[in-house]
Image 1 (tube, rainbow, N blue to C red):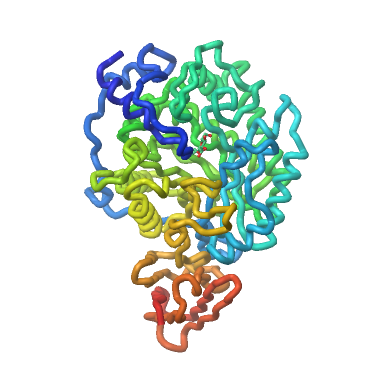
Image 2: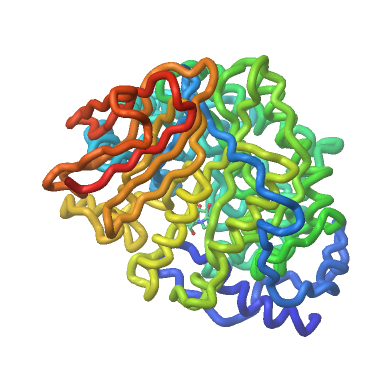
Amino acid sequence: MKPFLTTSAVLAVSLLASGCPENEPTPTDAGIDAGGADAWGVADAASTDAGPVARVDASTDAGPAPPRRFLTDDQGRALILHGFNDGTAKGDPEFSPSWHEEDVSRFVERWGFNFTRYLVFWEAAEPTMGTIDEAYLDRIEASLDWAAAHGMTVMLDMHQDVYARRFCCNGAPEWAIRDDGKPFALQELWSLNYFQPAVEASFDHFFSYEGDDRALQDHYGDVLVALATRFRGHPALIGYDLMNEPSGGSAVDVIEIVKGVARGPDSTTSRFDRERLIPFYQRLIDRIRAVDPDSYIFFEPRYGAAGNGAVQYLPELVDPRVGEPRIVYAPHLYSVQYEATSRYDDDDLAVARWEAARVEESRTTNYPILLGEFGMDRTFPGAERYLDDVLEMADRQMLSWAYWAYDPGSWSFWNPTTETEESNIDQLVRVYPQRVAGTPTSWSWDRRARVFTLRFDDREGVTGATEIFVPSERFFPSGFEVTSTDPEGSWSESYDPVRQVLSLTTSGAPASHEFTIRPR
Ligand code: IDC
């Protein structure tokens, strides 16, 4: 074993902790497949320790970052999503989340969560090779109907953790595991199982798309096609996430993951992305588009790497639909340092690095961005500041997001037993623009001063009002006032106290608007 791997392995032990408080990191390097040449030549990646983390500076020679792109609604308004994941479905016998019809109005009206990233599983949809379990799709449909009744949008996320249940977690059905009989030793911390030989082999087969292995991706695609055929046009459906945190198998790069170091376009992992991951996504996009031309398609970078701030070098995906492409980049954000040390310290650069990496990537491939997962244990020192840092960055970058996770526990914002909110709720609930009648150029929410500012430019062909979620009882018990740089009489406001939505209508000149909301 090369010496640096020992250090990395110790760090990696704490890698992307489980979200289960009971899963304490164990300081052992067991389970890291250190050596061995393999199909992806990770041995050479291992001989290139990229050294200390360099913070990517987004404002250098490369010039200003390109303008952010947005999802749009059917009136052409920029659509901004705030919401949550619910991981409960992983352990549920029916693969269902923990929320029900009666919860949805709380999500939407009390908290302003207009979005959920809804976990679906290959193992649930195609338990027997070649047969889609329609009863499972019926249950998904029930959730979609509940969401639609309250105007919450749902993204169906093809979830997996560590390939399959057999290896600890969830994802592929048993029949779709090809591990070449390689060894597997269960690691206590779930994410460390990614480095087990049997798991690496399973991902290698899945992503090879050669010979017999083609069947794996083709079946996986069948599930997405079944979902799209059944749910296209459903009023709650916003789209599909092609795969949660795909792993590069034997191309897994522990340094990239642990240190968040950009590995460059010629690295083993970038080669995997170019030759395996992006072609896989493109095949799925083409198949989905044959049945559903309109829903958004979300895609993720490889497990871990982008999440800790490493720049990814991903070739552009092509959306064959007529009109604007509807492909959304959906990386996650977790600080390895935070999870390794169980505290958020001043020297933790994960959030800054993540922000800079996304800006850097947008210079070549500029997709709308959904931060599909971020989260932390409320009880860790620095947790409150960490959440502020992430959420303020998300506003600064004008991102949509989904918190990990709603399921009961020390990460959640809701206690379903006592039916009370947890301490982090006043950070996650924000004044934010849900629909903007134009192109947003910036917004910010100062949760201490309770001041919100939105700037946006008019855009051709957009109709309807700008809608801002303003939880008045929570943040403005004595009321709020709206001011604008637009001339008096050129704009109007109305407030829906049930949805807690402020609607702003602008007319004519100027073409750039600024609105501020503050306590009365
Ligand atoms: C975690 C759950 C945990 C479960 C584990 C494995 O919180 O209870 O044991 O998955 O299934 C991710 C994954 C997401 C993780 C989450 C938090 O996408 O499924 O949930 N996380 O660890 N990547 C980084 C962190």
